[in-house]
Length: 311
Image (spheres, rainbow, N blue to C red):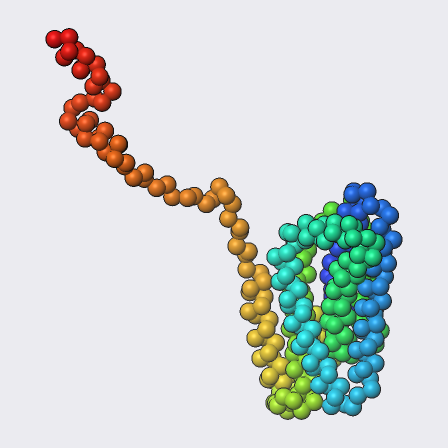
């Protein structure tokens, strides 16, 4: 439940921020007549996202056991790739997200209402498809029950409330810190999803080592409070193969280090100094230098000539 809540909160807040930025642009720019087209695009994006999740569910339900495991394992790896890209992309693009969206919406407003709806569809639909793609293997890893679905719904509801509060100015939060904390949490969740995908591929016969266990804690009660926390947060179970553990750590450690590494500050114009080149002496300045070295002042040469003439 906690995994799906964090996923729904993070992805939902990104979509809510996108809608808030687009709404602010339309209201401040005097284009309120385009707001219905904006919400139409958002609605279509939500329908497509839920439809994509339903396709994933019903497609896997009609497969054999081995095919289901292979299908789930491949989707887990693809989902982890998308989420990792999204986390690092948001880390660098959050500074220019507003200006980029404003530019796209300005071009869409000039083209008409259909373009505005399409811009909203693309901006929100990308977040929705990523959410559906990542939540599906998380559902599979958490097992049966309504907990994962309730967590995802609560996360999305929280994100919508925060997004509405930010738009109306009632909520002020450090978005950079929020995305850093939730990004680190998503990396931990993604490591567990990746390990679960490896286990699916092992059960499907694609990868070896299904019987080579790293540990087997038979007395671990998964339904206990500590089992729920460990399984829900880190996706670590009482039985894991050696390959699962190796893949888990090989993804988690370097990815977390790269994500938490301080970003290199962009150089400012005041920090960059251009070397000043020494001017090359011209022939006139060279002659002037020779005249000065011989003790004569070029500026007083006509005066001296006039004195000599009077003598």
